[in-house]
Length: 426
Image (tube, rainbow, N blue to C red; front, side, top):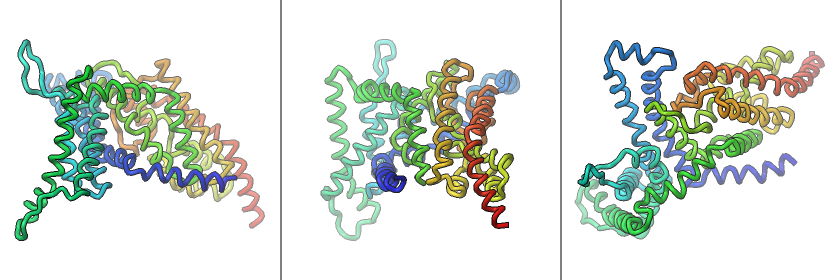
């Protein structure tokens, strides 16, 4: 039964994970993730969750203290839509066999063509761009612009729409003329797209995509059902040796990224946080120590189990697991294709999602602030920093303990079997 299920599931999961569009979306967001993490650290320092922190440093440096940190955080968070276009077009161009820098340049120009560039000041219109269009609200426009522009560019390149230069022309000059006609073709198409939308009630491509796609997807993604499905599929894939998050993130990552950016923007400006289910909810309140929330399992292995095999494996894997690396245990115990441990491995993160969702929805714990911590940040610390409250850390402790209780009867069954084998050998 397991073998049949694996034979059907593995090719499907691999096909999904290797889909060039989904892969490029995932890789594109990974390109800009280091910037977001670094800037998040500055934002966290400026708003550290200690009473009187901001007031103290404002007293030392004056009100420019806030201005300095706002300038740093705004340099990325006000342009996440533009950066998404940059990262995704680079990744998609590379995955499509193009010179990535050419694909990226064309995509960015196409993004700006579709971006409204006039502001009304009094009765006069001036040339300017609102960061509203370049920030989190422009992420889906950036995604689609990147994919469509690169595909159009590739279409023209495959048909050799190039200007041939004579021999002896420097390589840089020849390359620039090679992409001249494909670039012009893409720009012409996006110019026509802008004209078409200007003649509709939507007015701009930004309004069309945000109203009909981004806003509805945010609503669907910001739900317990969405996160429940995400964590269930990821956990089941792990049980068959497939890195679950790498597959499901291809679909869910853009939605959770937008939701996190909304919370981050609100946190940055001092407004109430709008969303419960964000990237930080998934990373910091669903699984502890890796897939299946295996930190709870390792605690049982180290402190309760008696067989040498399980106890020693627990000691070897507890440090990596504290920092979110669960693969040594998943493949070492193993959990893969292990029907005894697979049951709590799937149940535990699902229970964590349900409990966390309840705790956030009744405001027992503050919403996650959107600050992107390094994924290796240990629990308790991550819960405190990502919610700005000790209650976030307390919720993590409670869920780890509940996970211990869920895993206990199952790992004890395996422990008794190994203990009998070890006793017989001795």
